[in-house]
Image (cartoon, rainbow, N blue to C red; front, top):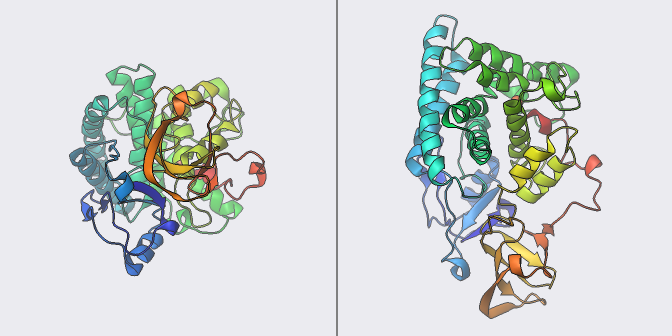
Length: 384
Ligand SMILES: [Fe+2]
């Protein structure tokens, strides 16, 4: 199977991995043929990538971060509680919040158990899911990535619970911000941005009243937009004033936002998003956390089309956990772009004279491009 950006997918191609609905159930199964209508519907839902069947890479398997049952249960619980918060009245408040904490703790138990079985896996682009509110999938993905980083840092189960809950619920305050503001395609006005920023304070307020949520998790909601140099919000905290857990969540939150489709720009590829984060090393984000994250991410995910410095092109078919930027590539075309009759594999971890120069038809590095002025980076990207 191959991983293609949606705009390069053509009618007649077949899905190699299912697309899930917002309950985490299979909406479009493996093998479904893409038609014009389906492609434009997926575009409307801002699906950035699709796993497509391809006979030259049909033996390549792309592992899921979570088992389907756990993903389904996680999506169901997140959706139920977030929707309830969006529509709750003062009368139902205490009831819904009590369940929120206990359900989210149960969910973290499930996630930690599931992730500890696949904890060595590299972080891949998330499953494709169509949801009415991007917040559901964003919350789950930020939680998965952050929990894996906590595991890599040697956190015990209690610490993982607190960190994971903080990540899962970091944006819960957005349930109280009008959707029209969160989805606004253009630039927000100063007043609108001030309103969106309130989600940190609202989230803290919701979580700190919940007996089943540690206060430290509530602080992740409050502090996840604070930055080391004091340029964040809501309180312009700096360095040591920001809790370590909130620093993890803040970094992963921006990564996830960058790798998602936005109305005003295409989703960034993992290596591009990491490069943008690195521009803020020790200014916005801790360098040691960035290194930990970089080494845990499949910068060039399995299934992705790459071009090598030799001019040959192929598809990533396996990852090297110790050198994530040097995966195994199956060469499918020669330097003139002609398909090979006998594809072969090169392991870039022991072919150091070869580098990846293009990913999915885009340069493998942003160097040379003025990223400061890039449309990729705007303050709305920092909203997470
Ligand atoms: Fe946020």
